[in-house]
Amino acid sequence: MSSPDDKTNFTLLLKTIRNALDRKGERDGRRYLLTIAAGADRYYLDGTEMDQAQKVLDFVQLMTYDMRGGFQTLTGHHTNIYTGTGDLFRISVDASVRMFVRAGVPREKIVIGAAFYSRMWKGVPDVRNGLYQMAAGAGGYGPDYTALAAEYIGKNGYARYWDDEAKAPYLFDGSSFISYDDEESIGHKGEYVRQNGLAGLMFWEYGCDRTHRLLDSIHRALNQAGEGKPE
Image 1 (cartoon, rainbow, N blue to C red):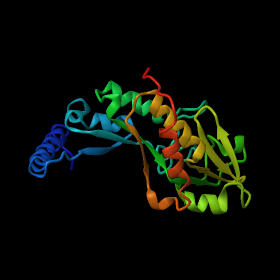
Image 2 (cartoon, rainbow, N blue to C red; image 1 turned 120 degrees about the vertical axis):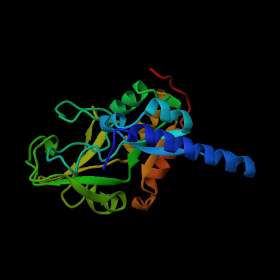
Image 3 (tube, rainbow, N blue to C red; image 1 turned 180 degrees about the vertical axis):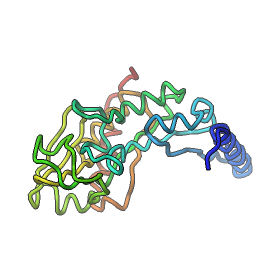
Image 4 (spheres, rainbow, N blue to C red; image 1 turned 60 degrees about the vertical axis):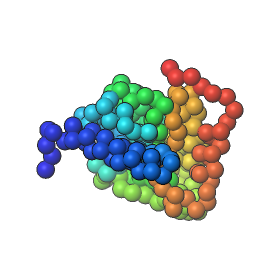
């Protein structure tokens, strides 16, 4: 069971861990990082004291994936940078970053997430290529990127579409809708990181992409010439 004290207790827990890591670091002659993986939406901020917690954290890694799927029958992007027209669920990478900055987390400590797997809805009406349509059920976990590249993207009846508002790709075969990250969307995420002065880009998870194309795209996206400025 949760308690109203858990907001403060979480901060105290992080401080305790930080102190323990600092003591060990003094003995070892090194500094140990303390990071968290944070839920991307408002509920996480409501349950924590991020303005206080961030003081002892090196990075706050936003889990900007699974933002649609498990509880929604409305199809959509699960790891989109921006919210597209017609999307009833307003959460996105950009919305999440803005919420955490307003909550007191410095931009230079924020890491955004990319997905090496997909979310999939079945029983989707053949309208607007399946985007923002009511499916027969909630979106479950779909194929990982290894399987997407081998069997789905442009194959077996699945066409790839690009949502330029959300900066996100999706697949549709007339009845099944798949949301995922690819090299193009990750390129935009890297640009977003650089333009907004963020710490970086992380992903879930390594074993989901045996092609290594997505990992390579992260490296390229974060190492392009030129530095952006925070808004």
